[in-house]
Length: 311
Image (cartoon, rainbow, N blue to C red; front, top):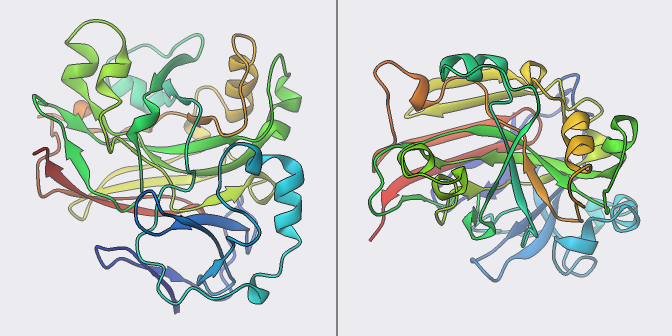
């Protein structure tokens, strides 16, 4: 096993296995785009075959909006990562997108998760939003907000839109996806369900939207319904499921949403979480300062967050 030169401030080292063939949902040696550097000063990068960060800033100033359109991504695919400057010390890894016009979520979209919450499987996708200001890096701390009582974890497959999407069919829907990433849809259940109004209150605190570590382009993920998701809390496995358990598949979600709104490049859709959240445990278990979450979606990278209290 060779170890990539990609470290978080917390000292996380991301391993890359030579000769590894990814599972059925991901092609081998997929193009992985990322952003690195201090918050607000990130530069773009691309991983090479050994998992080292290569500087992409001369070819892509930032990763958001029009940079996600098919023509731009096609141009990036033509680059040889070995010909790009090596970033010896990438430091902090930021969210894989610089900004998101809309941060959408789908609720109760895994059969077993709906069951653990006592809810009936929805007949149509349950749509809601996170504030775009919740966006954070995959290794940044998760901050428990003031007045919080029931902060929870949710590993999810993130879908990033690459072109304007309105009234598309399910057959066309995946052609409008720029790529996929890991999301931790951190949630405050009391804010979400006990304070009235819509779920957005429990989903939107700063740091509640870790995104990344990288964006894998859609052509490298031939089957988004064949990816394993896992989340560990303090080393104990909490969530372990396949995207095959989704009630509404990615293509269904994109097509359905396009009936009610126009999706634009850079929009993110968190497609729901599998069973194993703290809310569904008996007794319930919620996040506390000092907890460590480690989560992964097969082939899309790993996140690690330490939980801290708001000042």
